[in-house]
Length: 205
Ligand SMILES: [Zn+2]
Image (cartoon, rainbow, N blue to C red):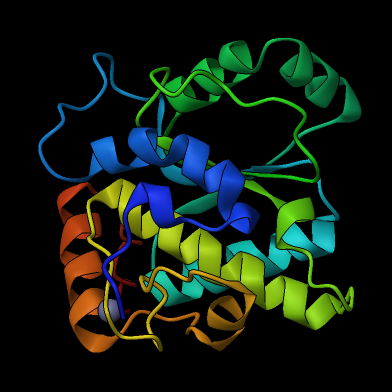
């Protein structure tokens, strides 16, 4: 499989493509934002069907054993987002350590230099042609895991059964894994631990 460059991203990932400089900049060396976020958690902020959001959040929470919170965005939030995406993105990115915005059909995107700890996925662009609910849920889980991975500092993975694999078309996206491969899983655990984002160990009584 070829190494992905931003210019090779297919149209389905336009939203991600536009945000790629922003996302990649989070990876390795870039300094974190100037002020510490108020909530040390990964937030999933969405205006989509709450069952879908719960499903994705539960999956990520279980897979990463990490602090994942949900923020529901109202139609009013989305109107204000579409008027001024930078404003909402800045406020959400200041509130949480990392944020994945799952937006039904964003009309605009923020400027790519606004934040380095937030990713946006367009659900509309991830919808399979069959409109199958299960296939859509899996696609969103895979891309949410991949975006969280990128934001915490992981690199793309060449193994297609890993969520960090960079899908280049719909077939790739439907084939790739929802979970991290063992090396990526270990790396994610280390990075999340270093950032204080793992759930606390249960206290034995
Ligand atoms: Zn991997």
